[in-house]
Image (cartoon, rainbow, N blue to C red; front, side):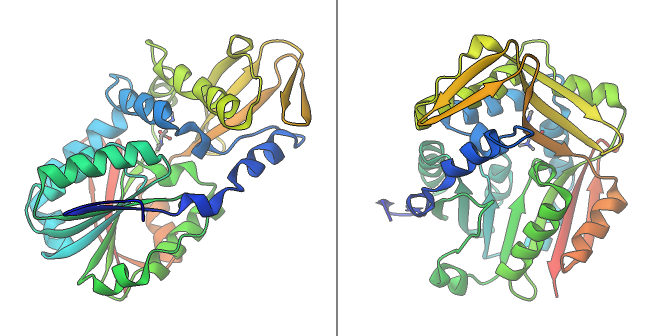
Length: 323
Ligand code: AVI
């Protein structure tokens, strides 16, 4: 534990996960180069992602918020009063405010990989909602996650909140494993409130990941700045370009960084050769039809209680429970 205020504390589990940059080197030296999307989220990456959520072209955030606004009373009834809400990848915690505002939640546990971002948002939330205990956990939840047992045992009823369609950033098999891991973390009667982006016209998807202002491009390229800083790599950002497209066959938006010339990048003792136009695959964002997602969730041990969507069916929000 690293910080305690009266109703706020931070538990840092990331120090125990210091092998995470080994994964980056391994995936960059594979035949098909890739980097896991979690490396997009250093502090600046988290700020850029917040800017993405405000973009005209990026419909998921405002659509999810509008669904939540419209069905808030019903959502709160599913969550139950006096309960604990655990949010994975909490970021700026804007959506959670809508739930905390109700005054029915006892404890909020945000989990995020970006320590500084998590500390700032937890502190702000604990000031804005003095009656709520805020326990921030710095962790990479894509690896195995062990939440402190005493926290879990003390909770009356738990709801995991996983908004924003972050589940789409997992491969299909990983999404199944991740949902199963959440089900195992919860007890009978607990729930999962999860936002999932829906399949739609490729043009809308293309624009959402290729905004006119170039914020998504900056977000993607910032991953290289992150590795330069953390690993002492020497990526030249002027020699890489953002590239995103909808792969209809696989039902996902793919984000890549394209090498604009043949070049060698060094990371520690490794020299990595890039051919001209070779790409680093940096993110997948899978889109699910409503029934595809419902099937995925039931296969992972959840029972569907309710699905909400918007009038154009751009986005879906599901409340699932554990038997
Ligand atoms: C966090 N995640 C759900 C976003 C998405 O849409 O896949 C990340 C993102 N990447 C580019 N724009 C937004």
